[in-house]
Length: 138
Image (cartoon, rainbow, N blue to C red; front, side, top):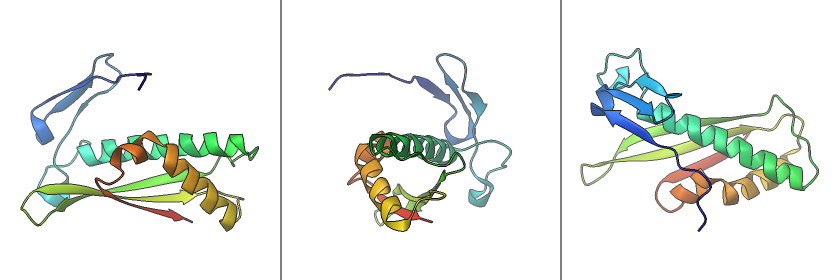
């Protein structure tokens, strides 16, 4: 495996703390979601994961569409829903639902593009077999 890029982010204070990237571009407080008893007003790890996954999956879609000479509408979107779940052993896990809106692309083509994108997206590859990922073409 050839490393193309490494992101470096340091967390202080866990879920009620701060995260900062080595280049200073990401520099935000994080908190527990209000639904879990947190104070709100800041992002949380699930939102950050959802942001990364949705952006990465959208890029994978652009790659596979481009290889097939299909130009995706600029208004096409990928919305990631990342859930924090309590698992049977008392620990915690994640699950993901991706809603993919490929405006102007027929269902059959959209399903094919999504399937191919799921094969090459680094987030999909990294989570495969570890967390449940549901993908809906809407």
